[in-house]
Structure formats: C-alpha cells, structure tokens
Image (tube, rainbow, N blue to C red; front, side):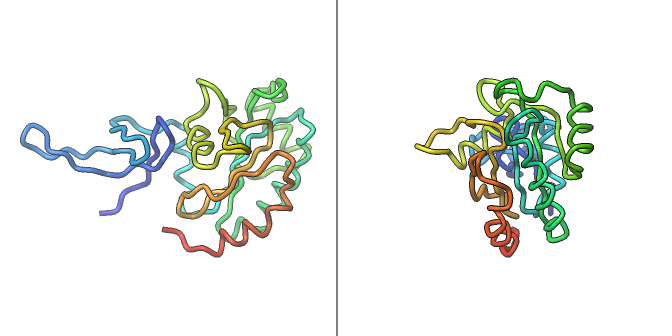
Length: 195
C-alpha cells in the first residue's frame, strides 16, 4: 500500500507508517524515525504544504525584504525559472528575526517580491528559524546540516538549504553565497533519482 509522505511536527523528518496492536486490534500510526515520536495529529500547515514538492529538488531559503541580500530574490527566481521544469523548486520562508528586516505581513511580502523581483516561486508564511519558536522544518534542516564550527543556528537572512529528491538535506549555504553559485550542485541533485 502506498501512503502520502507526512512530516514530524516535532522535528520535521519524514514519518513512517507503522501498525501497532492495541486492545486486540491493529491501529495504524505514524512514527518519526528521527526523534521517535508517535503521531496522531496532522502535520503543521507549512509541512503539509511541502508534501506537494515530494520528489523534487528543493532550495529552501529564509528571506527578508529589507536586507542587503534581498537582491538575491532575482537570482533565486532565475534558478526557479531555469530548473522548475526539471523538478526543482525554490521555497521562500520570510523571517523577521534578523534586524527586523521582514516587518510586513504575508500580503505585503508577496506584493513586494512580485512587484520588485517578479518572484513566482512559492513564498510561505513568516516563520522563526532560530530559538524556542523555530519552525520544525528549520529545526530539522539545521540538525541535518549544521553551519560553520558545527553550529546549528541560522546566522542571517538568505541562508540556503539544498534538499534532494529523496528528502535528504544535501548542503547548507551561507547568506553570502549567491544563487548563481549553486548551479552545479542543483544540476547534480537533479541528476539523482528520487526514492
């Protein structure tokens, strides 16, 4: 039987379907192989939305509209336009944790990105990427690919994570890494089969 991939609401890793015996009957549950949690509830909205990108190569980026790196939106859109027909998506996650450089709401952010940089890649709701309120997706990304000196914290806007078709976090890139510098890695990831 084939199941839709779901993600852990605690650590954002893919969940495995398990069958447990309970009170003389079998009950299907979802268990996270990474953190061990057994889940009854559905994934959070952002993680549920990511399910539609299963089997694609993803570049996940925490973004901001008032940052010195904001012009990278143009390069990210260029990558998306160049590779989306090959199974590639850029996923933008606005974040206001670095210098308050993303103060707007989702509508204002979308309008800015669309008007100024002609962004068509998916932008999600604003999230925290560090601290106690960090989104589970980002908790998973930073554990899978720590930064310099093995630190997990995101240092600034436009930190990028490349995720393979099989969901493996392949690489982490600093905010200073320009989108066009990722072409070889994206092409290598696209050449790999999904699982």
